[in-house]
Length: 284
Image 1 (cartoon, rainbow, N blue to C red):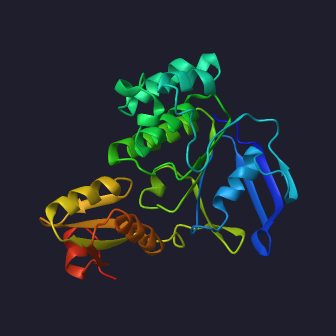
Image 2 (cartoon, rainbow, N blue to C red):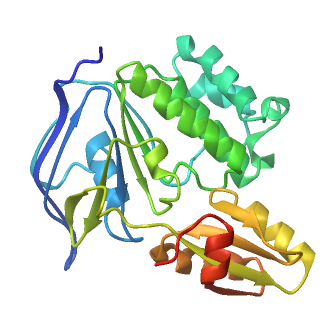
Image 3 (cartoon, rainbow, N blue to C red):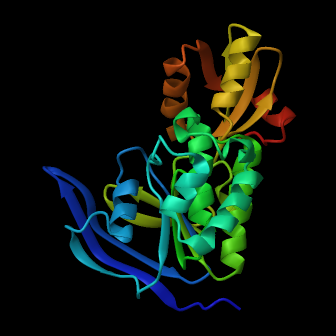
């Protein structure tokens, strides 16, 4: 049985950037073998909170105790030495005893053939998979994940969920911050909403419900590219040039921007009651 004693405690955490009060008296407790998810809009302070926990931010108000536990973290965009190969980055960034496990995970994520190529040739998704391999290879009591599903296809995202659950079974604890809640119940024991600088635990009834939206594109190639870009969301084909995507309403601006940045023009609308019924969702 995992140890249920507290291994991380934050009390009345405050953090400001100029006149912007990002965190306002935030409290959080984490026990061994516990997975928690923190959702919130961009700019709500999710990454700031993780940076305080890992020690990248040292000037803040309140008290924090992690009981000397070892942490492993993925925070914001992964950074590597671009002139080195993926394998060399593993040896540079990891203690020697963790390298072989990281290589196993690299292969699990399907990028093993690129391990001896320089990281500057990696796509964003490949960099993210390399970073996840490093984070999960370390034998840490606490793992911090900042948007771990970014740039991942459905299979890779499923591997991440499996790895999170494996860590929990072995008594490790995970804090995941994300805007994508379509599969959050697959890996989180508790879910918190970070809003106005404070955390609120959401009950089953209060959890923000995922909704279905239909995206229609001008041509099939645009739809195929969108499927690649939106692989970290739950999507379903719905005709030759449209897809249904499962998201929460607050994620729509993120999706729209991602499509616009890539020059994709499409229509986003809420799925009709018929479409919801057809794909297993009851009418409101």
